[in-house]
Length: 115
Image (cartoon, rainbow, N blue to C red; front, side, top):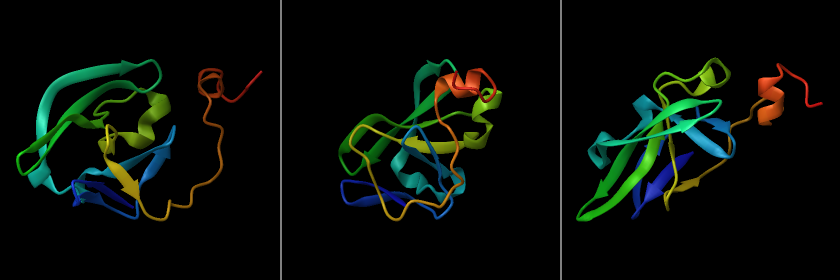
């Protein structure tokens, strides 16, 4: 999988984790030259607090286009320190093969029951 913006590869890895449609890349797959820390954060009820990065390519900046859960809640442990993208960053490639598992919030909160 590759994360691309402005024709530059921001991250590339065969080891992404998909949660709610987002591919989370390992930190060591990032091309650090394109990332700048941001003070922006957001809170997800089941994943925890996300920290953001601005993406900078040449003179162009995409504010908060990458995010990471450094200390996720237990239900989201699999994405700890992995980086996902949004806001115009294209993720392309063959998705990783992962075991099928329910993704609903209800499933996670009830410990495995969607009813």
